[in-house]
Image: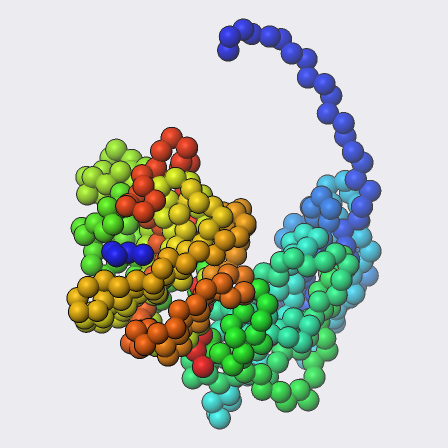
Length: 483
């Protein structure tokens, strides 16, 4: 790629019909109570689902109404040590539809507490193993999605493998997983496996059963589970690495800022070197946070690289380039030699937009290989492009620019991946092989990851009046695997 009012009218509005809401919220589940001290107790629960939305919660203590709150947790500071307290929760919506009381939980401040989920986990095993994640619960988002969360075990945890109905689903770096595309009324069973920096793995967590109609139900603790589930990908399907590959790099973009331990927010050659006739200035958010604009936006589930027209007051800071955008690289932070890399993203549509996910040589030499996992020209919305570049005797050589024809890739999220093997590169879209290149010229050296949104240049041309700004390149995750 980078080779581089005519009249005024008085209108009477028709009355808006008001529809009765007779549907109760689902029963509250995942209730837990834990003693904070001899005189205080924390009570928490999962947010239930409702067709309109839950407004608040009535707390029942020892079978009697006690208090109304509007969050999914409450601290009771009116308790006495060594007395037993029972808590149940009733949810209600704006129409004052009340569900039935939840299963009660019991806590005894200053005494034994079988429901205590706030106590710290035991220390990490001396043998280098990892404790199981526990306290799984789910927040029902709507009829077809839920956030599954858990308590992180102690130790230097690197990530978590998520299992759905017994099969590996994905790997995340934070103790939560956003489960989408669930079917209403259907049970889904979730287990979590933690692993640390040394690639030691925990046993599977106890199962959590999630049903968007009925909430979630944790499985009772069972310490007889002695499985040691490695982060092997089960292969096949939409968005999964081939069999036998292990995760070596991941950013799920579940935070609200860039992870500078993983990314640089600039090309290694800096912003002064304009390549391919492009018209954007890449804002180095990490090293220049006071620039006046950030091209990186976060919603807790995705990162969006946004391109805008350069505001007048920032033009001199942007080397007089007409657009601002963003680029990320793992140069000198993560590199790999052979493996499988994948991005799930929604690509930006519009004349003059050029988005890409690619790998580039870690060290300058005579070959300077580049693998373009996907390039997307915004006014050709039904085509994803795949290319391999390298130099031979200081002359640029390239494969044909392979096309992966499909739907309008800007309308939804799709996965774009490359399997890089000795002598062979294979490109995938949504888990299906689309193109390949086999030759002795395939890179055999360390390469790093890059993702960017360019504006203008010799290939896409410049934006025109049809191009909408801000333009958005929305990324769900970027992952790399090796055998």
